[in-house]
Length: 111
Image 1 (cartoon, rainbow, N blue to C red):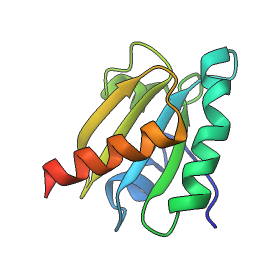
Image 2 (cartoon, one colour):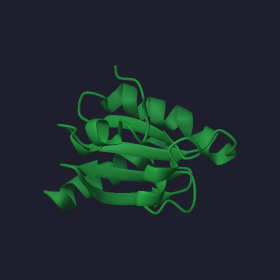
Image 3 (spheres, helix red, strand yellow):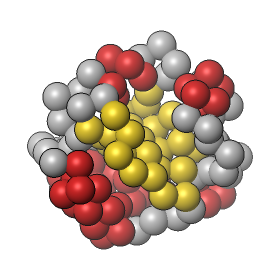
């Protein structure tokens, strides 16, 4: 069982871009109610699929540089990474099943 990892501007490269497995990154902020609604879904994905995927969160208020780098204009924004490259993104609240389905889809397209 894996937990959701908090990532910052300082740790984004090592935790996301250099990860040896696919990464799902939630760009969020504590004041954003839809973002807070996403938390249990991300926890579920991490606990069910943590052996195969890394699940991370980036607080856009605290890590503005990385949010700007990826053009985050709306939150929650979920970005999918594989081998250091963004391979997909969704915006808005996603169920745990939708997160997994999108991950499977973008992984299939990136191989």
